[in-house]
Length: 107
Image (cartoon, rainbow, N blue to C red; front, side):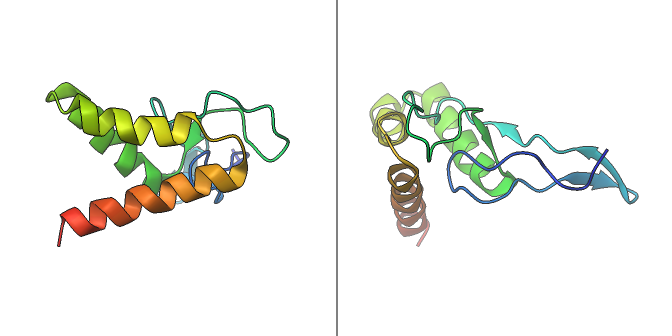
């Protein structure tokens, strides 16, 4: 398996890193980004696969935990920002807004 991933993160649009163990590549496909996958990927700038990098997977997990623990309004707001993205720029801006909000909460 190649150390190069064939995927670009659907949230931050950076390359998805390969996962290795003892120098051996065992995974290059990133993580499932649901529920933060844009619904309309018809624009040429958008990726269609719904996979995210390790860093963005942290956001995905936090949103899933919000849903699991009943924080549906907050989770819904974050999900909405990604699902309504129409272009790569929209998705990147949604990513930046969520990161800024999460950093502010942790201060």
